[in-house]
Amino acid sequence: MKLNGARLLLEMLKLHEVKDVFGLPGETTLALYREWESFSDVRHILTHDERAAAFMAEAYAKATGKVGVSEAPSPGGAHPAPGVLESFKGSVPTICFTSDIPFNNDTRNMLSGFDQNRFYEAITKESVLISRAKDIPHLVRRAFRVALSGRPGAVHVRVPLDVYEEEVQIDEADLYGGNCRWPADRPTADSGRIEQALDVLARAEYPVFVCGQGGLVSEAGDEILALAELFDAPVGTTMTGKGCISERHPLSIRVIGARGGTSYSNRFLEEADCVVFVGSNTDSAGTDAWKLPSARRPPKIVHLDISREEAGNNYPTEVCLVGDAKATLASMAARAAARGLRRERGAAFKVAEAMNALDRSLESAAFSNDYPVHPVRFVKELERLLPEKSFVFVEPSVGSIYSAAYLIQKNAGRMFFSNYSMGALGYVLPAAVGAAVAHPEHTVVALGGDGSFHFNCGELETYSRLGLNIKYVLFNNNVFGWIRGEIEHVYNAKPFATDFNYVDYCRIAEGFGLKALRISDPAKIGETLKEAFAHRGPMLIEMPVKAEDELVPPVPRWIPNAKRKGIPYLY
Image 1 (cartoon, rainbow, N blue to C red):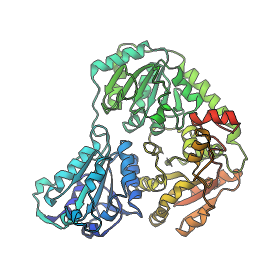
Image 2 (image 1 turned 180 degrees about the horizontal axis):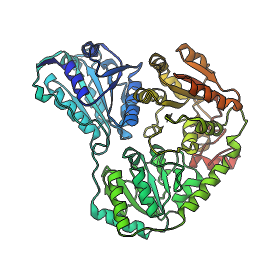
Image 3 (image 1 turned 90 degrees about the vertical axis):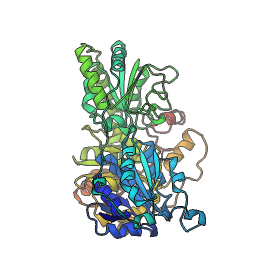
Image 4 (image 1 turned 45 degrees about the vertical axis):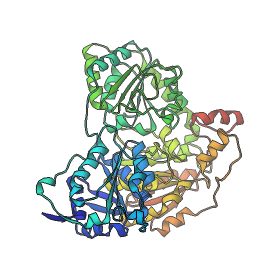
């Protein structure tokens, strides 16, 4: 059969079960768009910025368990970089297609040409150049395989405009797809090392499990609990692993570390003599800069990860287990049961005592009538009223840290989404689109800050045009609050380059066609949320809050300064 490159690419996306692609047109993609107009099997989601498109693809991948796909024309060829980098560092499989001028014409200074592959090599698993239309099937299949292999991540594919226009004769036998879902493989760790890990656990007096995104992606919750219950071990998660198990489970110590961890949860890591990391890259956020547990005086460490590079990366490790979390933990639990390794340590009682104390510590904040609104009151109202089918998106802001710590996730599974691999602002507003497109039956709650809003507020038009069921909650303190917190609590300096003028965000949202509400009375939080959830469509809720230098969230390294200066804090 005879096909042009554009049609061939679309056919390959279809064969890889791609349903949605996020992007916007440019002169170098018009040959692709000409074919796309009559190709209904792959839906094009029009965005206003290539960066937003890449964030949408990243969120789509996390919400669906499939490779997320974005595209960009050469004038905006560098713009997807923040979203691509988040996918790369966050181990999320995405493919970013960028079109280009004819290859080598950048050396002639043709408008919008640059060496895209060199640009993307540093922030992707692989950057591919397609120089001939006949290579599209092979290279697209490779892009999906690379994105999904081992530790998943971002892949970039560069397609010059003349390749889209080129017609080639293709044998039907060459038109076949491949896997688009993750985890793509479920290898089980070496059996000898599994036995070693069980020996370490059997000798431990105070073991603790710490589960990251890898455990969540692998849907290993049942296996985590099976093993934790055998060894009577508390289970915590990182922010990106929130949802591995229900936070109502008797062994759940909820989120740990420096982003969402509290003193009640982190204490378990301080006292542990054995820590089992499951699908966690042991980054600075999840370990409070390698103090939880201490890298200088570490307990016995067992580290299970799909990536050999990550297993044992930051701690002296007793046993490294390289494999899929679900498959490996299932094998571990079966072997432990067969060996009769069950232990009783009273962990559930200690966990209940700690979690009850944590909940009691929030009581005054949860019913606070303070204005600006106390974030804990909002989070607990949100927890109470959140529809059953919901996603919650956060980014570095007041909304993220309080919700990670204090919004109790009742059911296991991916409900809570964050971008804490890179932590770039401008994430949550477009990322919510990716999940809402993938799951229109869900309510998507996006918790964003006013500082971040300005990065991608044009995507409110996308909310409106597509009628997406997104409730965007804007925490407004008229500052870059996180930076202001760092300046105050770490550098003990005066704020600099952090403050904005007043902006009427409700009027902006209404200008884009959204319904908008402002919370001006804490007593109206529940009423406002009920109205928002009853409205089937996009909505913005603006809520004034204090900045992080005035009301300190549970960030461990900020707490000493708050105590010293008498600034209100929670931890």
